[in-house]
Amino acid sequence: MGRASAFGRADAPWNVNIHYDAKLDASVPDDAVSVLDVGCGDGFLAARLSRRIARVVAVDVDQPVLERAKQRFPDAPVHWQHGDVLDVAGELGHFDAVVSNAALHHFPDTCVALRRLRDLVQPGGTLAIVTFARAGWRDLPWALLTVVLRGIAIRLRGKWEHSAPTVWPPRDTVHQLRRYVRAELPGADVSRLLLGRVFIRWRAPAI
Image 1 (tube, one colour):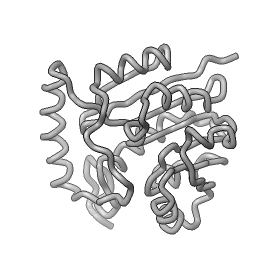
Image 2 (cartoon, helix red, strand yellow):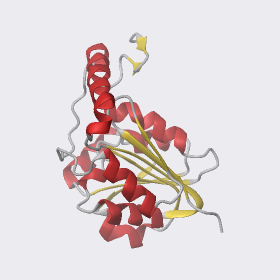
Image 3 (cartoon, rainbow, N blue to C red):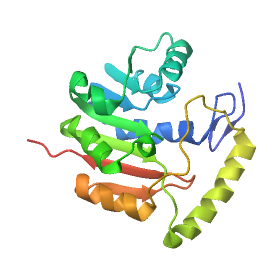
């Protein structure tokens, strides 16, 4: 077995996205029975969630990457669905939790995307997102720190190259993202993460 480190098992694929799968997993309540993974990419988060959640649906707009996810995790009890969540949301139903890792910045309109993800959450359920945002001048100390820490992490673990399409640079600054979240997800927590991501967590009002 590989040597363990602060960033996870040394014998497991690692990159920053996979690193933050654990944070998203921990954001899903223990009593959740259904979870939607939006922009599931290579499938690591969906497969992880399926170990403890009865119903896991993973949706991605890119058919080839979705097929690779299915092949990578053939035994995971995940319903893999091809499509743009903006188009297929009506087919999906509602979920105790909706999660998304490194996909929000792919959507052409952040507010529309947040609204659609919000509407997929059951009353009392959870929405948890890890995403990218550009650093404004107030964020420069954080941005510089993330460069250093990310470099250390990659040096320790290596970097597994994902197969999903990329969008760069992110359209929204941290300030803009916070403003959009306040508008669409009242009461949500927004925090900057040490490896250069932003974390959004929102609890839907209970009926």
